[in-house]
Length: 479
Image 1: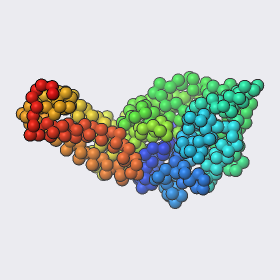
Image 2: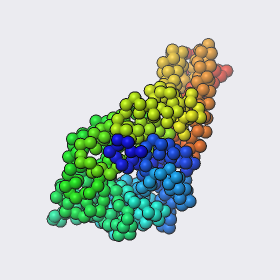
Image 3: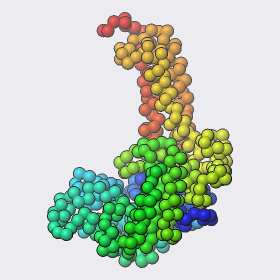
């Protein structure tokens, strides 16, 4: 199955902190993951995990139940996909520390991003989260403990006092918490190895890394989602980590969710280049240095940001990237294989509507999102901001005063009604398609962010027209 790929493990990242898919959709998409070349999934549950006891408050409204998690693991096993759960334990703790009951564990009181590493209660919280996740993932060979983007570390009052004492440093503070978390995993789950994002390790000197126990406890995941990543620089970083004592390393690319905080369509070319460059990195370091690669698919930049590309929208990019990794390039024959897997005649045309049932699960969502993203806003703008009748005879000045020449209503109203009917119908189709894959809050959020503002602009125009067309017409003079 691995073809010429230097990455033995190829994991698809499911970021559930936004737009978590229903289990029924995972049952449809897991076979495609496997067919495309994946052999594992990294599941970042965040608030979708069914935490119990005093952590029950962390659950999202539609969090998976324990039985649904067992079903996800069963589906993964059926499709020969190894599951690695991800639990944030340091940075990106917003979903935990936003709650008033846990706010006292913040590093900086104002910000819910980062856990205070000085408090024993912080470590107890992390241990409980890990234990509950591991209880539902018995036998997991790896557990990802996050630790990326630990913003404001060292800026809390306790940290500032601690850092004033020699030889304490921010790097030492970071490593000590990482070591405490990883030690818990090693002690409680000796057959499970912690994975950790590498960004907080990059600037720590080699001797300080090797002087800690972290290299003996974790496998770092080197992440870079750029289309122009520094291949030589990555090879040097790999060498530094190896010299520091890390036995195994992982790479992390991105197939979606890394090119814009409110991106709605996935730029496939960007992500393909990212993967082709990771293949070059793998080819420039000693064989078997990189255990695998995680194809990240971010759904939000953080817990409080808007949704970026939905999972079904990113599937063509995922297909391209997995097949490129599997075959070591993206030649014409590989492209043809991707088109066959997706049930489309041409990747360039991105028209998934004509293929019907032969297309991939969720292709109806992609087709409708393409229409909304490329044409909804622009078509409404064309009417409201560039149509000569609207701009010339029903400008904001006229609309506020409900002034219009009656003949102009006949020019404007039919166009607006037709446009609204067209987009209302498409919005209804999209809502139905989204409801099959996602929970109600996701459907509401995506439509509210991407569809409703344009529809409201049309509705407001029609309402103003109706009021202006009433029995009374003022003169052209300002009242």
